[in-house]
Image (cartoon, rainbow, N blue to C red):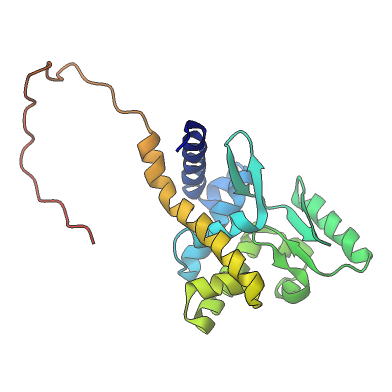
Amino acid sequence: MPRAARRAGSALAFALVLLATAPPQAVAQAPDPWAICTAHARAASEAEGLPRHLLGAIARVESGRWNGEREAVLAWPWTIRAEGKGRYLPSRPAAVAAVRALQARGVDNIDVGCMQINLRYHGQAFANLEEALDPASNTAYAADFLARLRAETGSWTTAIGRYHSRTPRLSGPYRLKVCRAWREARRAPVQARRAQPAPAKGRNAPAPGQMAARPAAGPAPEARR
């Protein structure tokens, strides 16, 4: 693998690990818009019993935005998409205003928020537009919808595709994209650990040619499953 690719992969791994460990309460106290979707997706996943990292992977595919500082594509909470164009707004009020402007022109096929919930087909699930663009409500509805699709199809992979569309030519490529992002998210903690520098040798490190003291015997490691 080229060195640049390794650096990009390590940066993505660190970004995903940091975001995945940020609880929604911490995000609320010190809002980092780049962490909002991931934190709420994790909470919603736990509430619905979804596989780990799956909802976060969908969020990255749906509302992913390039973060140059972290060298990663991360979900953005104030994303809207309509008329074939995606927009990243700076705040929820700005996103609400942009959606209202579209609706005033008669546009109703609009995707909003972390999980890009479509207002034409799912808008009735929210009390108002502000709630639809609330990251907690947006991710909670997406988690419930994905769980219902899993119950309907009996398959997580099929449910992933149907989250986007029931049309095979549309659901197939989308499913592959999400599964790739999901695989990256699951591997991120391992990649982050590998990218960390080795600890410095202590004063008591054995001299070259000298055998290190053996540690006391402990329980045998578990066999890999």
